Length: 55
Image 1 (cartoon, helix red, strand yellow):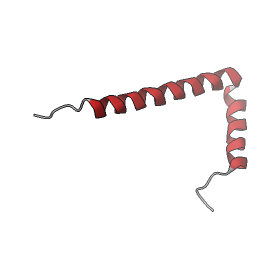
Image 2 (image 1 turned 180 degrees about the vertical axis):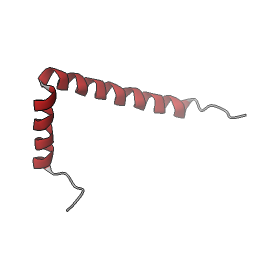
Image 3 (image 1 turned 90 degrees about the vertical axis):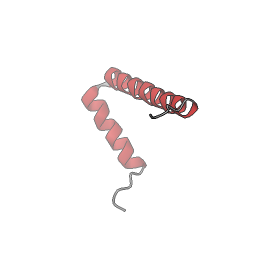
């Protein structure tokens, strides 16, 4: 089925990324992605708790 990624495809993509970036750079990218997701979720949560009034 086109458009669906299975386990072999994901492993192949991760292996290629590891070859291109190296283990330390890949770890930094993962850490940055995790922090970005965490910040995004907290911003969405803050927006729901304190909605700004539009004039």
